[in-house]
Amino acid sequence: MEIHIALSSDENYVPFLATAIISAIENNANELKLRFHIISVGISPSSQDKIKEMIVANNAKCTIYDFERSKEIVGDFVFEVAKINKYARLYLSKLLPKTIEKVIYLDCDALVLGSFKGLWEIDIEKYSFAGVVDVITVNHKLSINIPLDCKYFNSGMLLMNLKKFRDNNSIVIVEEFMKTYVKRKVKYGNDQAVINALFYDDFYTLPPSYNCITPFYLMKSEQLKKLYGLKTYYSNEELQEAIVNPIFVHLTPSFITRPWVKGSEHPLTDKYLMYLRKTPWKDFELKKDNRKFKIKFVAFLFKVFPFDIFYAILKMLSTKNYFSNKKIETNVA
Image 1: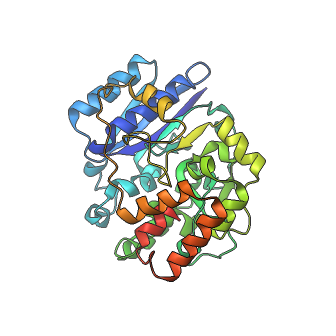
Image 2: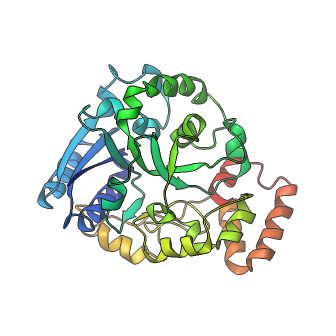
């Protein structure tokens, strides 16, 4: 069985791209044939060669698409966006050959620790996407005018129905929305907001093991619902299963730093660095913790106080406009 996996990256994220890819190969190669589709947004020729050599050496296949040379199929306005690579996945239905009717999209800040066979076999003919429900504040939904009681999905791991996307010519409504959205001064998410604004009711909901985000390792279900103002969410049993047997681990920002940061306390740091050392970037120098002071301060509070006390302090700080900066809210709460 051959499955198609897509990722997008710029040059800065190439070490993380390579780590995600090698982990996917090692945990899937025994039962699946993998073909990677890499959307390059400024990846250097030398890095591209290293990625290709690594993939081929591990008996997988690879195609690299130069997003910046795709203006004939991508809206010109996209190339005026500062973080252009954040929107590249929205064009997979046009970039990939029409013979490919579905694809698994992965963010680069991740590890693949399980088989994608079950995911690939899910029937999503009626849906444009399959994904895992995210933990976000009400402001994310308000900013894109979707119902507050609907699910909001994390776009870091998506099973995408390219056939339906093409049949419905969905890229047209995507671009129409993006033309105004990218001009906003305050945005709660990039392409993730676009996807949820237009397709929140066109998702097949996956169990959390397919996108095990960092908050799952830090809080129980009731705590997540309280912190993010969620009425419903995955159960503790579902979250525990995701932690113990994750298929895709998404190393999202939270109250702890990510594994490539010096001193990271993420429970999978050692495993991440093990996979990183299997890539051509094995000598990658860990980054410094460059989080803003407010984010570090709140992370410290989370670490030293029981959750209920931390939550009370957080609410008090919020009433005093400590979180008037949208970026603080997005990365911490």
